[in-house]
Amino acid sequence: MISAAPSRRVAPVLLFGAAGLAHLLRPEGFDAIVPRALPGPARAWTTWSGVAELALAAGFAVPRTRRWAGPVAAAFLVAVWPANAQMALDAWRGGSGRRRLVTTARLPLQVPLIRFVLRAAR
Image 1 (tube, rainbow, N blue to C red):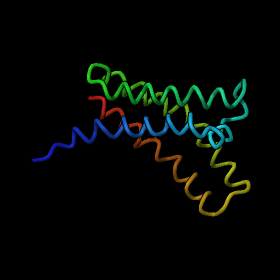
Image 2: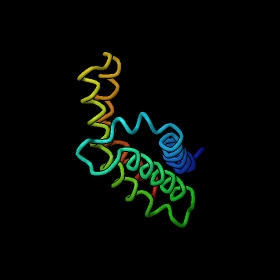
Image 3: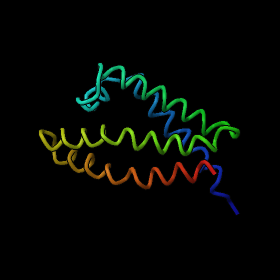
């Protein structure tokens, strides 16, 4: 029987690693969704969130740190939810129908993603 545990352990590494690299290599799109209410330049928030995502990927990759990576990743996903909400609001103000659908559907998907990272840490 094939265990789901290895894929459950690799998936968050890939997810947070790819997201972190995307934030650092192509920050412009992320800058645009930083909620305007946050203090300081959007680029700083984009950069630091990318660094945090890479740290979370590393946390999931190392067995000794995997246990804390789940709750920290869950907290991170809750913290970035306002940026996802901002993206959806912006799409409704001037995006295509497809962009509205994708950005709006993404909002409730944070809940199963949070549950997934918590399970992956076990």
